[in-house]
Image (cartoon, rainbow, N blue to C red; front, side, top):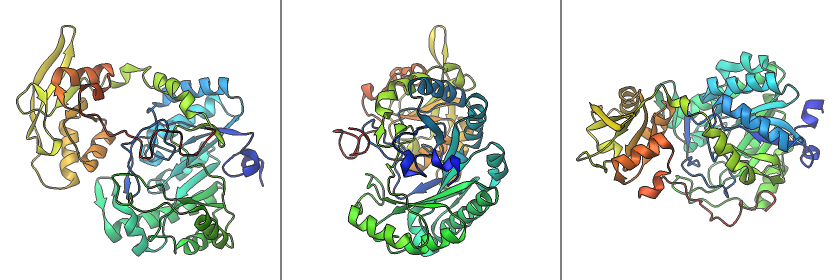
Amino acid sequence: MDSARQSHPCFNPDAAGSCARVHLPVAPKCNVLCNYCNRKYDCQNESRPGVTSAILSPAQAIAYLDEVMGKMPEISVVGIAGPGDPMANPAETLGTIRRIRERHPRLLVCLSSNGLGLPAHLDEIAELGITHTTVTMNAVDLAVGQQFYRWVRDGKVLYRGIGAAELMLERQMQSIRGLKERGITVKVNTIVTPGVNDSHVEDIARVAAGLGVDLLNLIPLYPTGDTPFGHLPEPSPKTMEELRARAQQYLPQMRHCRRCRADAVGLLACDRSREMAPRLIAHAQSRPELSAGRPHVAVATREGLLVNHHLGEASSFQVWGRSPEGYVLIGSRPAPPPGGGGKRWFALAEVLKDCRAVLVSGIGETPRIILEEAGVSPVVMDGLIQQGLAAAYEGINPSIFGKRQAKSCIRGCSGNSGIGCG
């Protein structure tokens, strides 16, 4: 085993008790909507991918990393694993890694991706000295793969069904080949989903081995509410070990995965993300000028007093600004006409391109993701427009005004799901 792998706690179980990692949540956008994923949830007691207490800019991430390094000198690895997909956020991801290389050159750097956007950045990934990567690959058969995706977005084109599965598999295989050609260590993550791909694991292992993958991580499905796979059971430890035993004839197995959050920090067996959450949030709030290029806030309202219109039902949006005297109504803008699927929401993002947020009483998953990716943050609430504007401009939690954004913990808040140090 090379020296880099020896000090990476995910790739070497012997290092897990002494070498720590920190994940920097700088990648909120995602280009795939998987049937097991619900990124609306954020509970400090819930440990699973896609969850974080805050989003950082590259500059904020480095300041946070400096603080973490001061508190935890055992940190050997810094990774970017979301909460979206790092390569759906290439500027933020690669910009952060470039800063890490300049400030902390001794650290190992890794990233985790679904593979869709990786091929376009393979040379830069190698140039930046990223030593470890993870590609999530849940199927190597299109009939199985299509069951995992609600949609896949490449540029502004949405794919569904077999087309989505075909594109994903093609890019994942291209990513793995390209990474291995550049001498980069590759782990494949597979979400074991009962009745979907649990009988397909050996095929995935065989294909991954043929691509030169170094390690296979079979992860049991974490049933998440409000998703198509939310009703499926989590595979038992016995089932997982049986599957790993079968897959091991093709590839070494990772057996110590903790299903880390996008803001995980500390040793694998003693995660300190709850402890560090206040500091993460403080760093995320440290640069209010980051929104200076988006001075306005859009509002979905029926009568001009309350936030009481669902995004999809609004025919127009009020646009507000802020002056030294208070909040000022700038005017009104028409919404794109109904229909057209995702194109309607891309068009709305263009209409609201100078708005940092849109206040609504409700919003669907697809428009929420598209608007967030375009830099327009949906604030879901019921209440006075003035209160919503305070939430958008001052960072006040909109939940105190009525309807709160869905952030409840799926499994209750009695701990971190048995993961970490309790």
